[in-house]
Image 1 (cartoon, rainbow, N blue to C red):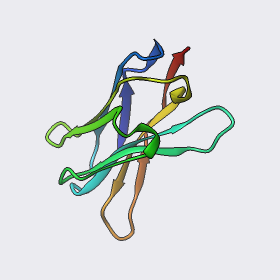
Image 2: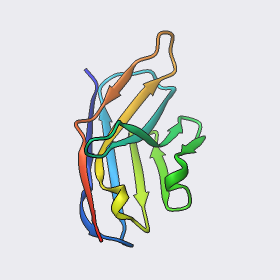
Image 3: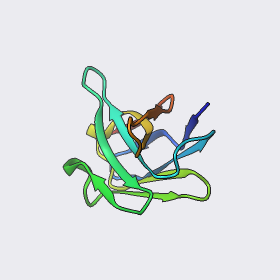
Length: 118
């Protein structure tokens, strides 16, 4: 049973910073992509940032230069440092693990709310 537990969300003013953490537990393939997705009210879930076991990262254009993803493979934890936050960053943020297997598997956290006030 794989569990992903997110922490670090909350309310912040525009221009501020937050750091999200996601700790994974359970057994899953060691080579994987860990990342963050978000879903704003009335919108579809979208990719924010991902990072492979080897450290290759990918960002949505809307967060490039403001957000930084990192991970600690030994701790099975992924982080998202969010700087220069904007009201449009307001959403529920979900942690994801995507395994590099055939077939692949996706695991999701329960989501954590981030609110950015103007």
